[in-house]
Image (cartoon, rainbow, N blue to C red):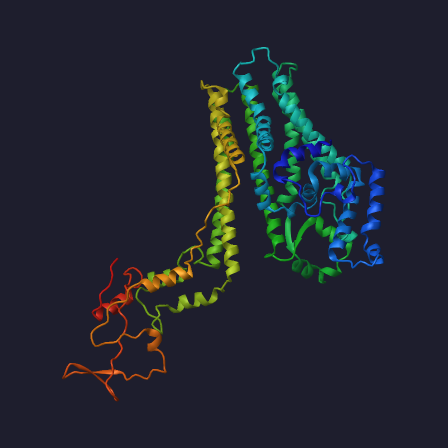
Length: 593
């Protein structure tokens, strides 16, 4: 079996579930065994075509339905899969559903994945958990071995080359990846892109440049191992030469991006005096080498170019701090300056502070722009209200609305934004805030590791494993949570479970209303429900009050029992305070509960 299929089975078997696909198995559609040869599959396809082809069915006088056409199409698809040895091996390993997910990853239904995983066996789940454990071991094995060697657990004769074995394995994998990227050749142009507009996103020059940079890292690691094992007597200045070159290539790569000039199409058309569509190919190539052309300053392309430029400048600043740190480190080791190691690591402390401060400034800038567009976006009062209250307290406008002319002018100058724009502003602020929090938390975590490392170098007596203990604690917590999630997920049974729909049964409600006793009628007064009161067919005379007699009289016609309003319903004092005041003025009683 191919290695990719073995890995797919190990990772995805619990998510695939059973392969009970509507329409039957491919082998059953062709009526062949699973170990059938290619010739047998071909003969079976011809035989099934004579029986299932819509034209053959019509010749035999049968009315061809959509089911017949779908069955023939599915049988043809089965032959295309099973006649190809590569596709057949994939189908035998992961089934039809797995092949569909490999071809169309976005067609995966998350609910179906969760359902299949909840029904999977403990063995399939153990494979997934084993992959996470293997990744954690591969990542933390090297630092654990280095700490144990520094503490002398392996003895004084242990070789650094042997201790760094996991590092050489990682380097071999990464080197294999770079070689494969170079050997795959140029990327083919998609059919929907014209040849004159196609640009290879991964040119060969960039691939070779990345390989050279990685080779410099490998050479530096080998030199360090030679020097630590005393195989060579070089000074540390010579050992760090590959690292100097690597930093120089970083500056060479980031410097053009850091000084990149961003221009709009309108600026180019104004400068050259003609539309951008009339630019020649030579002019476009010359412009692309010197400038980054964007449609406008409000376009997403401008924001992307600005981010690339900002990131390049930040990378150059980080590279400068790394160079200063390496120079201080070499001076401390080579010349025995006996400086404090806290001073040697001062570039790291400053860089950590600058990274956190830069992310805070970026977040503050995004929040300020959002406040300018909509001050009420996050529940804040507009500046106009604050100025009107603080500058002219109690002043009324022309119509008595409390707005000054200055505030009204500012309100009219600020354009209204739609709900979609408000949601976009909120998303930008939230994304910037989450980015700031993640950067600051990661820098704080690395700062803790650096403090433990410098304390150990300075002479602290704790074991070296304490330095990487925060990483180990975080990794252990993540593995425990993953284990609980993987092995604890089960399918919730729905048989025999009654769900509360939140609605009352009509019959029960009607029965309850019938059984509810009505209030006793007042002597001499007939109560009329609201439906009868509002009925225009019942022309009952309205009663009037005789103030002298203190009796109710009907206005016209024979005196008849009059109607009164139904008893007032209890009112919640916390619900409608105005209604309570009106009812209290009429002398009505209320339920305070």
